[in-house]
Amino acid sequence: MNTQFLSKKGVPIRWIGAIISILLLGLIGSFFLGEEDDNADLAEGLVYQTTYEPFTVSLSESGSIESRNRVIIKSEVNGQQTIIYLIPEGTMVKEGDLLVEMDSSALKDKLVEEEIELENAEAELISSRENLAVVKNQAEADIAQAKLDYRFANQDLKKYQEGEYEMSLKQANSKITLARAELQQAEDTLIGSSKLFENRYISETELESDELAKQRAQMDLELAEQEKVLLETFTYDREIAQLESDVEQARLALERAERKARANIAQAEARLSARRAEVQREQVSTRQLRTRIANCRITAPTTGMVVYAPQGNRWNSEVLEEGSSVRERQELIYLPTADEMSARVKVHESMLNKLEVGQRATITVDALPGKVFTGNIASIAVMPEDGGWRNPDLKQYVTTIDINETSPLLRSGMTCKAEILVAHFDRTLTVPLQSVLRVNDQPTVFTPGLDGPAVALPVKVGIDNNRKIQILAGIEEGTDVLLNPPLVEAERGNATSFPTLEAQNQTSGSSEGS
Image 1 (cartoon, rainbow, N blue to C red):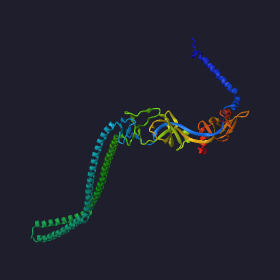
Image 2 (image 1 turned 60 degrees about the horizontal axis):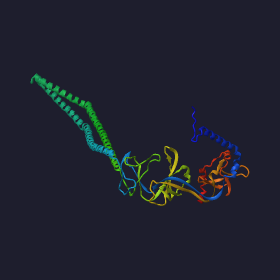
Image 3 (image 1 turned 120 degrees about the vertical axis):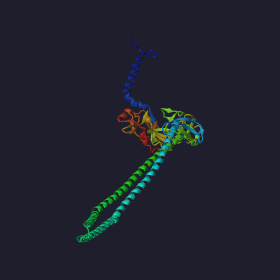
């Protein structure tokens, strides 16, 4: 079974669609059939007669009220911390009053551990300092002993060269001389004994005893001479070589002692330096922890009224309260220090070239209907703020407007709207913005023809206020211009809608009458 959907009045929906299609076809047909009469229709009406009039250009932006002079209270604790106490917003405080306290229990536990590590590091430092003193004393003793051994080795060499050898040589010569004398005596005795033996005065045994004495004396002389030869040929060279070797070994031992002493001292000093650096690191860590614990309690630096700083962003606002987690450098509280207020608005980058410091503005506050405040632009941000992840291409510049009046009703955070006066002309020629097209890259207006098509008139334009645009040259007062210019003609000339920003770039010299 076919089901036919009906409207509330009982007419089938498909009939309604057919009727709409017929009407659209009729409108399109009438458009093409009546294209030849468009200029005539525009000539009969939809015209604007140019005239000199007062002309004001202004920007209207929304924003918020903030204190002109205020102290910003921020979290100075590293990492994330949880608020365990927060003073109520709107409270009047004086210097020293507690504003915010954050949980510091974990930091205090860590501080105890750091203090224990600091004590251990200080003990190691004392041990390293004493060890360095011991190493230095031992090094001095080793070097002194090595120097003494080297000195004695040199003395032994000199003593042998200049004393012991000469003495040994003299002893050898003396022994040879004595042996020669004894040999001579033994020979003389043997000669006498031989004569006596021939005369039978002594026995053969006595003669043999004298001969043996001569032989003994002869052998003693040969031994003495041989000892002298050995002394001069071998003993001297050996003793000199040994003593010189002892001197060299003592010198090398002294050098080793000095190098070992330097190495041991350097090692002990490095160990001491490492322990000192460790103590300093632990001291810094302990001091930082104590500072972080102290920073968990934030007190008022001056007298003022507590105003919570805005949290989050326009799409994800947050409320500052006890239990909230805050990060380092996060703004928590504003303390206004004076009654002067400012309006903080954001201006799109396309309008930035219209702004100048010092321009006048009027400010209205949503919470104070009927009240109008005046002010002047105090500052324009150098860098823009983007629109976040939702609109990263949006570029807006924060503009601060100082409010001239003071009122106890104005509070930080109130929503406001600021209208900035860009330029004002007491008398200038203007036309509606839609009357100007760009034909062949030339701003152009169209006037109704007498009996034919519209006439294009190139003009020089100035600044606009999004409704009207200033005409600097090209037409006179009283000229009729079409409010609906012939787009077909403009398109044939590669026209586009006239961009107001380019018009503004040509007005630097035209705002002198403001």
